[in-house]
Image (tube, rainbow, N blue to C red; front, side, top):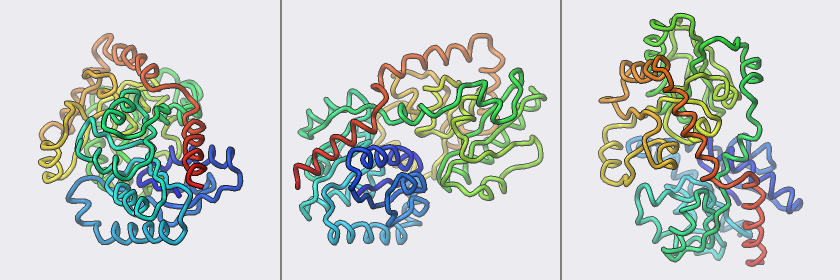
Length: 375
């Protein structure tokens, strides 16, 4: 049984599903995910479209739906008694499912574990009680979890596998119908409904300010698979024209000269593809206040966190994440000689810190080993 709760988890869960099917062709995979995990051979008991939310106030509003999903998955654990439960990120629900599974005698493997080094370090106590094995995606996580008494192995970050399918820049530009000498700005407003509502108008207005300076620039918005096109298009205006493309996020990342991107896995993916960016994010006031109490790192983007320094501009909440500020940071990168190249050079350090490709295969072997030990 596998449980992912967001678009990035669905992407990386799909790679794990394919590897599991290759290494154990007779395995029955079921749980929660999205279209990618379903295509990879997993039976969906719940869809991530119902659970992909962000922030405390958003969780409160969706609590009835989340409870129904949790009960459905918990009942499946008790009735099916899977050989192993694989949790993929999404700790709010997944740590509760881990407790249910352990009580039922089902071993738990956590793939893409909670970032206890960034916030809520107390979660490690829950993980120590209920999780049989953590599959760490950052090298330092293995030592961190082991020092806390949790069995952990480093498998590498799954974006390394996902990006293998990304086109080269020239091919990406041909795919999007963009000439080589055209200034292309990519917009990535996120994969959750609340992100789309908050970030799309912000990026639209920032794009208008950039277009006022670079009148020949083109703007392309990469639509996440969990987002309905209409939910994005209702926030767009005729000026500047912004083309919305679905299922081509990596093409947008690779083809763009600069990205306006919502903080999340996309910042790490874009950095590994070598595309400069401005990162922005907004949550509710309540979520911000709670976040300031528990977050332990000075950055919000994975690119900066992994590199350990402020390489990309980060604009957070309404005070900083305004259309004027985003456009100003974007224009500074576009119009300052060497600014874009400085980001690209820093991004070159990332791949050495994240392991090597083949993450899905390594993770699948360890998952099957846990399942076999239980059997």
